[in-house]
Image 1: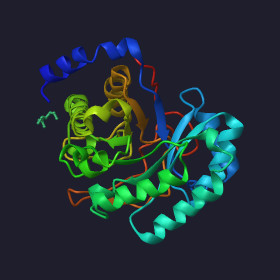
Image 2: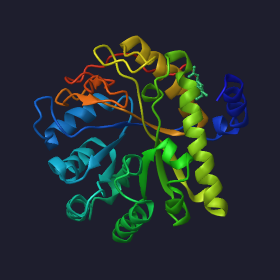
Image 3: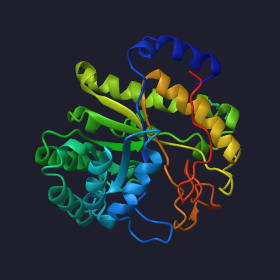
Length: 304
Ligand SMILES: *[C@@H]1O[C@H](CO)[C@@H](O)[C@H](O)[C@H]1NC(C)=O
């Protein structure tokens, strides 16, 4: 989107300014810096560090590291809510996560803000939209009082790949958008992020038609790496740039009324290096708003 497009989009959305600001949450990993699994006590420390900013986090596989089992009591103790995740890419991972939810949730529905089945699995091409819809419905049927949906990259919504899921009646969508992974320099990052999220939202609402008002829509992940992270084309890592991205992009998205899960709460120093779409080795350990020992890196107060 060009700058003029962004301004008109914000102007068109201005009633939302009055109606409701989006809710800020954080993506939360399930391993400690030394790669051990987080315990109930570790999650409690995480929540103590986050509590001035939010009482909402989202996690990924429910069974891996006993995430659902360990995070639920910590959330209960600290007044947090969690979005739990199911990895539907293979039968094995689906069944493990589904079983973990069936063991952990009953009686604790009050701390579960939602369940996401799939995390960018359409983006990776691991599963078809039809199969993913079946998985989502299986989980929905098991937990009728909980909001169940999916998370994927913005472009898989915008290009229609996810249409069968919207047509299938799913009403909870988290859309990931990283201007950084699109190689955008910081001065164009907010426009890119808004364009991504707006395109995905428009497509979902168009496909949902009359049911669009039932949809719970949010941004599932966005963020910017801090000092020590890798550059990605024109997107440069740095703590000052991450703060600029937060204050410009994240604050504006919340003002627009869109819920945002910032990626991520804490640096995940255990993470191995990965190979980016550009073929270069990428450091994935500096995406936290907090260091791995839970010290905040920059001020996140929003200008409005
Ligand atoms: C800036 O972002 C907009 C919106 O995504 C995009 O259309 C444009 O190509 C970007 N500019 C550059 C130089 O990449």
